[in-house]
Length: 196
Image 1 (cartoon, one colour):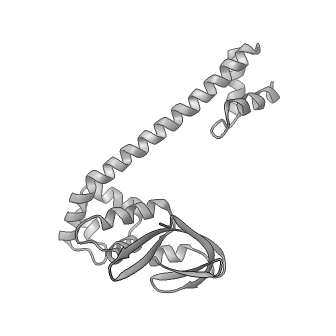
Image 2 (cartoon, rainbow, N blue to C red):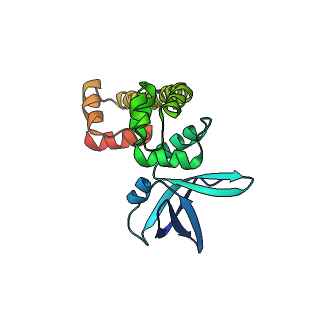
Image 3 (cartoon, rainbow, N blue to C red):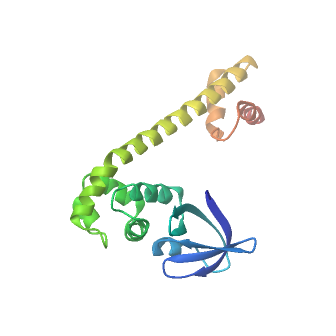
């Protein structure tokens, strides 16, 4: 329901913060590590959120990054792991370290997290390993598609500049100087023409 909440950090406490957004104070449960990274009281903050509704409780959980939020969602999908346990795990290990430990079957590292025994560690590896590998494959696919798109735009700009009479060697030299990642074909051509 809420992707993130942006506002003034009004209160920091053990296990939660209060963020004021247009006069409404949102109590958001977070790991102490994430709370420590938020900054000073009364500063503007942005917290990614997970909205949990249970028959006896409605809660907001907060995270500094989308990666932390995604890992939390994966953790609570494991049987026997609740929201508080997941927050505790994220308080005691970096998301990337945890993902590496799961993918590499490092039960010892996972069970060294406060509150996680060897049986829970084995269950985490068993249930999350394939999900994390699938996420990595999806991320790689997105990166490949992004690179292919950038190359296509650069190629179109290069072809257009050749039509305008510039030789390929000069075009390649000029395009190397331009950060083409965030530019459209037209913008690349305009930038290139300034440098000829």
